[in-house]
Image (cartoon, rainbow, N blue to C red; front, side, top):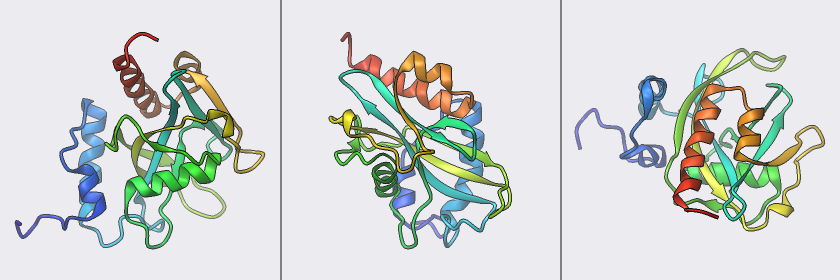
Length: 191
């Protein structure tokens, strides 16, 4: 191993072989790369830190689940920060998915590969200054979409077709994630 190579952590493994697509994601990956050699890239006190998220899908109906985020006033994917001691991006994504939706049978789909990486600006709140998330995005599937329950009344959940989801989402980076999931649905062939 080269002297300057990052140790083989779960975060490094998640990005092994990952190829950014498009100029925005290439720029985001360049900003993300230094986090691989930081002692704690997950720590919320740093201006740019790692988060993990997922679009939850129900492949038989080709629907996606979006969550209302009151702070951002937007329909977004599920996900968030690592808890202390957590370092595995996929495990964090699965935990966040369960916590935010109550769906117990979540699994990576169509495999455990990272589907998108995006650096996202987060506005300041009463509790923290403005900062950025280096968000690792996965796709999780369920066979029981009817079990989805919001973690609180303000965090509404909606199962949507791809056109419905695209109509609700304004953020270009999430529109790109939806587009990638749409291509995965297309690979399933006709319904």
